[in-house]
Length: 258
Image (spheres, rainbow, N blue to C red):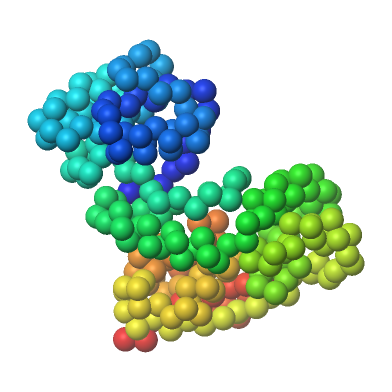
């Protein structure tokens, strides 16, 4: 990962925008959609800055001046001068998907965004809002955080009651909560054989399991880049062999084939 992706709350905050023309107008629309207030020069309390100037020297000077004020600066079409870049955005508020290339190719980010746009239902944001509203009820039904997370993961799986790609999923949260279910989490152990240290060599099945697993048991020599593909909250267990009695939920054993 070459950049840290974050979602910045700009509602009511000041954003400096230096420049005019189509590029500046595009940044202005982006800031306004996020609720920011645009000014043309530094003001106390400014959060970030955009520079959209065609002249290289003028753009660099403007960026340096704003950076000296403590702002993070984006210089349009000049990645080398940027403290941050703006991604291509899929907006299903409150669900927001950002696709970035570190400034390498805005066209590639746009093409990926268009593919994702075609996959996601228009009411995906309504599902997120319904889950947020149901948070207290979910805590009552599943007081244990691990059990609750597994129940939510199962409900959001493909073909499950709250499948995010299903058009009517947003209307099914109450029925899902009310339905009787076996909340027990049986222990399940899956083995992934690694042919290389490159995460791009992972099979689709391996990548999917890494994103779902509760526990990762792995040989000490497994590359950090592979482990980084697992969920951040999955428990890592360096081990010489797979567990004889895996804990509740999904566990993985990562072995090295080479």
